[in-house]
Length: 316
Length: 277
Image (cartoon, each protein chain N blue to C red):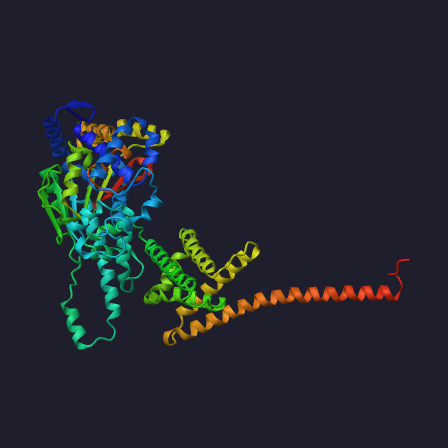
């Protein structure tokens, strides 16, 4: 009986801790007093992070840096391997541990590819058994998506820092084509260490069940770049700009995979040309419009002249 | 006070009765499995090992593994993965220096890559049948047979990568103790896998299943193995076993994380999986 009560307490505590508390409370009101005391006990024991009552899963994942500074989710921490890592697992959620394993697994990608074997090696590097790789899907897609989101985060931070420098006046504001070129180049350079296995990654990402996630990561990255580029359009331009930049990014990525020039010079030149083309397209569109207007005005003027000459314009 | 099929007995009596059941069915265990499930149990066990996806070097503990079905499948799987691994390594050995060639001779080229499976069972007769089967089929390397109780395993802490219990946890008297022992002997990051009969959700299928279980299986037991009562116990024990969600909660109570289950054949059998994190 006591065991059952303890068990339900523990389960309730974990449920809260994983942020599913709201659903549970609605499902089983009589358990409320038990869950309340579970929260208090946890907090007083300094086992748990801050107010769990309101935390959603999302909030939880974004707050890892605020507490227990020794348990950073990114990167294997040598003092928390083996038994130690098992205790620290009580303090972090499963998602954070999964992120740590995937980050550690990235080291083994050049050797094993984007596969469950790389994830198993990553788990072993953290001191866990290789069986922990069973937590992830066996096709390695979660590893690739994790890497992509890591790259996107790094890119955002980079662009943010650059913007701050510009705002503080320590750097000049770049012209837009230069800005786009630098942003895309920085993002593509992050792929270079894994370039040999990147075609495999792209082909896995193109599989139907992976397309939604990979597409959303791609579009959010393009969105970030254009936001920091200062795009404030609210009309059809919003879509056309993103579509054009997505096209430039994808084609440059493909070019990079077959590029053998020193430091990928050919790729960056290709990128420069594509962006120049895109800029010209924008200018041409404007020119066409203004030429059209000029032509229309000319025709109107000619029509008025003819009316004057034929006397139709007189008002008597 | 606990249950033995649909009867109520004490824990002592239950252990004794189950011991007798397995002593009497041991010799015909595999034959009966095939005839009762029309051979589908082989597919279930294949799914379990595929889900495990063991790599060379994995240490497996197969509890209640009696006649060794999971253990043999594990060895086969690891052997084929190992072969592929060695082949891939060979492909890279195109242009080697003499020193690299000398090094490659010292590399570990064993067919199992260090994997080991320990089959633990509480019943001597089942282990005997398993050992004979292993000899007949030619399995010797990486296999060991241990007599032990799932509620009190004769192993140290943090020893195994994977713990499996296929169609055995139903016969354990104190399931919570068995789960705690599983947690204890697993390494951090280790995986718990349980393959067991469970509750069928589909009502039509459930009725057909009940009909088949109570009318056909004991008869088969009498005809093939000469033992009606053991197979009556078997189908009754399936009905008394906790359903998927309850077993999932019990596994979480023992301390496992990321606990999940997969229904096979719409609930006739379920694979529960948990990680020691």
